[in-house]
Image (tube, rainbow, N blue to C red; front, side, top):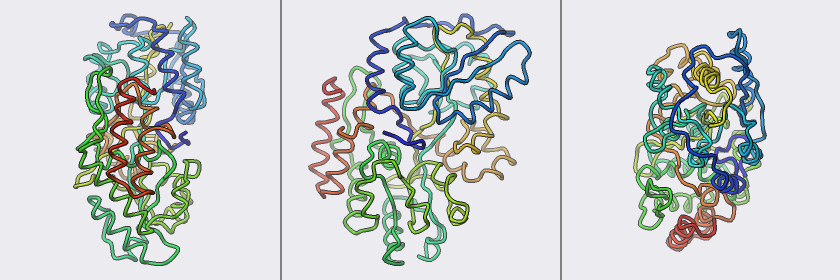
Length: 434
């Protein structure tokens, strides 16, 4: 199960909830009726994952101050429980108006008819649509229609120790996995208590968030847009093999702490924060939450792909308006406010990045939050997941992704791991063992 900074939140509960949602389908909504009222009034009920609560509550307070006849009320629900609570309430007529969901869960809510089609409303605000367009917005798209927007971004990135890099004679962050391995070896050579890299070896979601970007752009593990007929892309995946070989060498050469093998996510990257590890593929929280003394030596860079280039997994959250919302126009007005520059540019204070690409050209923002820029830039060409089986495939501690990684890295059998992984992935994608 993910901790606060792990973006595949929901685990097995999410998979079970998706099934419940589909079983209790409320009927797909294909129009934006009720959303276009320019002067909505009343109350907006907003349910958010707890990870976003500090920002959501501040934005709601600012929104309420700007309004006379419209108010938003925020309900924060623990990340591990929000899917279960939503599954129960969406079967009733007493539903929240706005949701802040894990992007990976959005497709289940869309397919079950529980989210409102906002295409017309979004098209009517071209400035906003242009600012949030790209892979993040596409995660809320199905069959040519939009059922939500991105809300906040938690992109997978590489945090590295500039002081150790300098001592090892390394001029900058790695450009590919070959460089990354060489850098880890040079840093390890600095001393017996200094390590090149750290990773969560017993945390499926941690590894999915931080390792998939090394190869997914060139070789995804899940192929096909038809959610009922997806195929496993594990076998003959050159990028995957290079990535597993990289981590196998890291482990065999002692470039990572031994404790990484049993790291289940509860203390993920805490060892990096101490200051004796060169690199930590993870999320922005690793940098933001580091002690001030050590943070002075830390910097952020994009995650390199196996053969060069950069990539990132688009974690964070999506906004959605429920199909049974009593105040869809008010909900949309609040979402527009929360996606405005003034609201989005405060996200780094809570450890996340904004979803507006135009902030990359905002001099004041880029000067204040330089550590946010690598992830935000990578997000413009990043990737998300569209599958009904995210949890059992990639977040389940007994699933095929973690089993494949551990067999390849800790047992040293890369080819055997890939073979078993292909079978395991395809079995679940075929609807078995999910």
